[in-house]
Structures are given as C-alpha cells and as structure tokens.
Length: 144
Image (tube, rainbow, N blue to C red; front, side):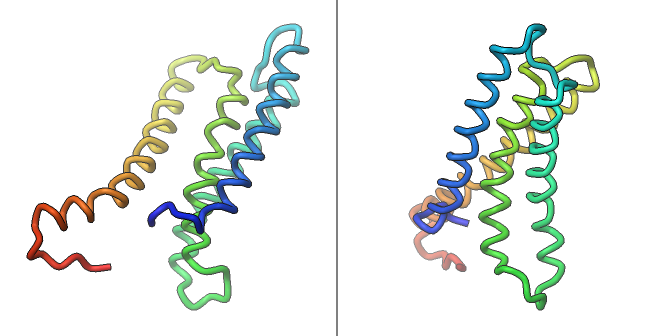
C-alpha cells in the first residue's frame, strides 16, 4: 500500500492523538513524585491505549478472512493497521516511562520494536521496490 493523500485523515488522527497523549504524559511525568511508571493509573491507561492499538492492528488479518463481510473495505483496515500500529509506539513508551525493566520486559520491547521496524521497512519497500525493478528490468511486467 502506497502512502499518499488518501492517508491524510489517518495521519491527522494519529498526529493529533500523539500530540494530546504527549502533553498528557509531560504533565503526568512532571507532577508524579516518583516519576512515571506503568503501575500508576496514568501508566495503566497508556498501556491500555497501546495494547488497544496493537489489537486493532491485528484485526486486519481477521478482516481478510471475511472477504464477503459487510465491513469497511480492506484498504481502510490496511491504512488503520499502518497508522494505528504506529500510534501504539508512543503509548507503549509512555506506559513504560522510558524504562524497560528486567529481562522479559527488554525482550518484549525488542520484539515490539522489531515488529514496528519491519512494518516501516515493508512500507518503504512497497514504495521504492516497484520503481527500482521497473528501471532495472524494463522488459519485466510489474503486476498491480
């Protein structure tokens, strides 16, 4: 999926939500005497929001299993998968307060960042690989 003007609404939603969450986190981090933690009620809400974003991003595979269902188009779900998946990053970082804890937490964060990085890599490849292939192999037909 190419990121183009049709993603404007998703971008605006994610940008505005990230801005509001960042301001809430800054207020929370400056007013918390022991610093931000995932166990405080604010940290728990950031964790719930981040987990909800990941669950929504995961629903794309379920939507693809229901091709005849009267749900939003798969393109809408794919855009949501991309943008809401990215939105999970600040929420999870705000949940942790910038601390990754013990071995299990560090491992989970490494997997989380690996998944996010692989998604960004995939979007970049979808943008540039078809153009690269068409210039390198001009006789090859690129399917849409």
